[in-house]
Image 1 (cartoon, rainbow, N blue to C red):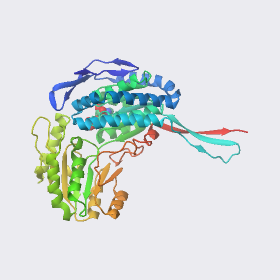
Image 2 (tube, rainbow, N blue to C red):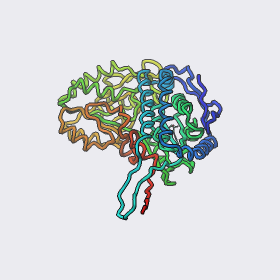
Image 3 (spheres, rainbow, N blue to C red):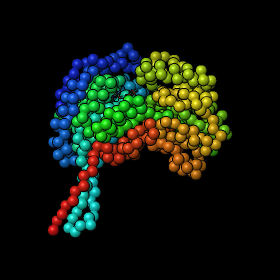
Image 4 (cartoon, protein in one colour):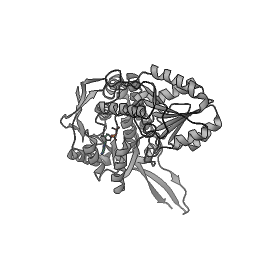
Amino acid sequence: MTTVQNLIGGERVGDPELARHNPANPGEIVAVTPASDASAVHAAVSAAEQAQGAWAALPAPARGAILLDAADLLRSRHSQVAEDLSREEGKTLAEATGEVRRAIDVLRFFGSLAWQASGEVLPSAMPGTTIFTRREPVGVAALITPWNFPIAIPAWKMAPALVSGNAVVIKPAELTPLSVAHLSNALVEAGLPAGVLNVVHGTGSVAGDALARDPRVAALSFTGSTRVGLGLHTILSERRARVQLEMGGKNAYLILDDADPLAAAKVVAASAFSLTGQACTATSRVYCTPGIMEAFLTALAKEAEAFTMGPVVSEQQLAVDVSAIDVARAEGATVLTGGDVPSGQFLRPTVLTGLAHTSSVVRDEIFGPVVAVLGVDSYEEGLARVNDSRYGLTAGICTRDLTAAHHFAAHAQVGVVKVNRPTTGLDLNVPFGGVKDSSSNTFREQGTAALDFYTWSKTVYLGHE
Ligand code: ADP
């Protein structure tokens, strides 16, 4: 068991109060953390505010060098970090290893970006005048992160915030404190000045809420549920502070008759069951045109039965998943495969058929390894079903028809379209975000687009004789 304290102004403080259990072995306590109150959060924001000016005054490449050194430190201990991540979150060691590599690459990407030009030089109508823009840091950036990617999401929010000269206060998910501790330790050991990065552990309703309400927080980036995200949007918008939200999804896949049923089944199984279905980009609805339905279902059942998954993250989440399957059964669903819990928190990958389009299992987010397959008569009906959702994060289409693929890319109401590739998994250099209730639909995350959220543009006129 590891004690993980808060990091405030370079000091490790706070008494251990909240315990996190290993979801694969619930008797084992993995970590204990403080349950911070508003005063700890305000101290962290004060430390950030104090440290930010000197940090922003450093040359950008000096800030980037710290991110690059932190990447090297994480790389040197990546197997330990992956083991801890797997123990606290439950994903398989292979998945955890991939996620730690992603965090390392994110630090390298933004660390190197520090050498790139930022801002623009513009012509002026006035003689003897040069105009240029500066990208200014917002100041103190707050990050509230979920448990499902416990090191990658903190890394892809922290790295662009830090490299552009902001100080950060992060409130990590209660369930996964160790992964953020590894990330923040690497940054501190790499030379990040005290107060530039602060970590406060605790519950969302107390520590998270206090962080969002602190008026010195200039920008808040959040990933989590739609319910919490919409509440945070109200709080931040009232004081006209920036807010970036990545929230729920009910991502859909459309399988057309011309697709290869085996390839389509592999893509859908990866989309629905990797990370135990606990990714905001996971597929949970599949629409098939009539000619491929039978062959696809046979192949999908086989893929599901052979799929290796970790446990569901918590007893509460398992109860949500099992109850959704019970509701589906009551609504007349056939459980094609899975639907049971062979041991502990291990739910079998579950494929449901025979549901109506109006079924709650087809409409509401579950966040587990449960996918519903429904029939549609045509591509047009499939596209309409895909778009008939309050969410709009990702959507996929399996087809060899380029016309259909391009039409889908243009008309799917989502932030990310995948053709013949799983809805889960994005490269680190691409803009990521959704529309409708999936996202604040303003600033994108990842890639160079991420820098926009953490900076604002100042225009400078320079007159010379
Ligand atoms: P999930 O269902 O994935 O746990 P949540 O939205 O509940 O999603 O949690 C995501 C993050 O938001 C966590 O760090 C959690 O502690 C935090 N959080 C939860 N409720 C609030 C709240 N009322 N205010 C601020 N942060 C919150």
